[in-house]
Each structure stands twice: as C-alpha cells, then as structure tokens.
Amino acid sequence: MLKKPNILVVGSFMMDLIASTRRAPKSGETVIGLKFQTAPGGKGANQAVQCARLGADVTMVGKVGDDAFGKIMTDTAAAAGVDVSHVLVDPAESSGVGHITLEVTEHGAQNRITVCPGANFTMTVEEVAWLKEEIGNYDLVMMQFELPMEVIETVAQWAHDAGVTVMINPAPAAPMSDKLLACATYISPNEHEAAVLANHAICVDNGINFDDVRIVADAFQARGVENLIITMGENGSIVAGKNGIHHTQCVRMPHVADPTAAGDSFVAAFCTGLTAGLPQGEALAFASHTAAITVSRMGAMPSLPTIGEVQELLRERNYAGFDISLLDALK
Image 1 (tube, rainbow, N blue to C red):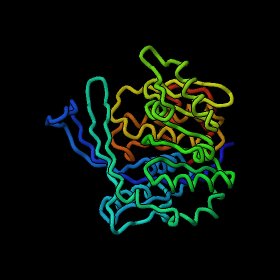
Image 2: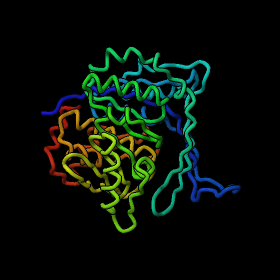
Image 3: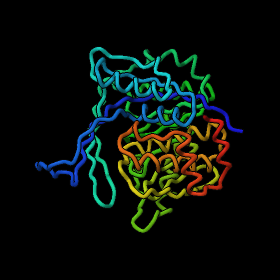
Image 4: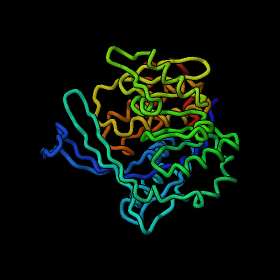
C-alpha cells in the first residue's frame, strides 16, 4: 500500500521566455523564428508542481518579484495544489526569467537556456529560519542550484540533522562543498552536470560507456554521496549506490516537442514514487514514464502530467514492474 508523500521544495521560480526556431543563430547572426511563448517554470517550481500533480502534498519555499510574472507563477503552482504560503515577494527585484532558444527539427527539439535569477538570488538564510524547527515534518526535501548556495547548504544541514531524506538536483552545475555532499541522500545531475562536477565526461557515442560511469560514480562516492542518479536523455538513466550501477531505459514517445522540464519531471516523479513507498528501481521506472509525457508537450509547468496520465502510459506500454493500480492511493 502506497501513502501520500509530504514533500518540501526549496527552489526557484522562473518565467520561461521561449523562442522556437528551425536553427539557432550563430554569433552575430539573426534568424527568423517559428513561435514565441511564455510559460511559468523554474526548477524548484517545476518539481513542486510535478510532485503535486502526481498526488504528493507539497510545500514550496521560494521568492518572486512584485510583478506580473511572479503572480502568474505562484498562481499556477497554487492551482496545481502546491502550498505557496511560504513564497516570498521581493519588492525591489524582478522575478527570475529563463531565456530559452528551442531548436526544432525533424529529429526533435533541443534547447539552450540562459537563466536570469532575479528575486531567487536575494533569498537569505534568515528568511527561511523557520524551517529549522519545521523541516522534520516532511518526508523529503528537494533543492536545486537556482538559489544562493548558503541557503541550500543550510537547509540541507537542517534536513540531514532531522533525519529527512535530501534530494539535491545540482542544476545548473556549480561547485559543491563537502558539507553539502555529506547531507545529500540523493544527488541527481544530468550527464553534462555530472561531467562538470566529476571532471570526467560519460561517452555515449556507441551507447553508454560504463567505464566512464564508474569513474564518475566513484568521484561522487569518494566525497560521501550515498546515491547518484544521472539522467541521460534518450539514453535513459543510471543509478549508482551501495548496490552497484543500474541502468533504466528511456521511455520513448512518438514526438519530442520540448525537453525543457524533462529533468525536473523525472526527479520529482522519482521523489514522489520513492516517498510514496515504491522501491528505488520501480520509482525510477515511474519517473521515466512521467518524463516521457513531459517531453511530448510544450512549456515547463504546462507539460507536467497528472498521476492519471502516467498510469495511462504505464498501462499502454504494458509495464509490469508493479501493480499500477497501487498508484490510485495518490489520487
């Protein structure tokens, strides 16, 4: 029997400004695009909304500007069921934005993202000090790297001290202190972030080079990381821990519309499944099916599926790793 998880997300809000084009411009070049649209996002908010749409009880701690983007983003998260009562408003700084160039070809879509953090980077430890006494009430804490590192390290320490599972999604890639790594139950970089953090690339030219994976995993484990999850795009995902290295295949969809929130969707679904009671391997499969739906749709938050939609895809693909009806407990 699964249970409804209680998840805390300490992270960012970003309004995504998306320009779709057949070809990204070279330096100094102007190209005619296909379409422009805005969509609420931010790694923290995306993950919070995804957890909520999958049935978790979710509290979001973040910061926006006193502007239209900030209101749209918090309203969208609240509409998904996220508790946004602890989201702060900075009257002196604008909400964060993500500038996304989406290159769309017959082979799918690839993105290039520039983040302007705005109010996200004005959050202080003092503003979240209430969490020190309350953090033990949550099953799991999720954080990313679109907030000041001092806030991330402090909250991670509070969670670790309280015996709460800590998921660190180190995106965008940034140096990580031994203090932070020692507090992380899980760390979930993508293949590019893992290469930067471990100073070693994973070759995928002829399939995944597992010798490279072992080198990267050893680098993280040498610094105290308990469990490493690497998302590899179309090459699936890898988990490395005390039980060795395991690979989960990518769940392919007929059409890739926008990969922008795929990693956020995957991490959020894994955390939801894990804290609901799924074993680690089954939580990874649940996450893979969730992210597959996300990449088939446009936008960040708008693309994130509900628990019912994930169940439908699991049945469509004849997934037999666990009884899919168990997920009804999350509705």
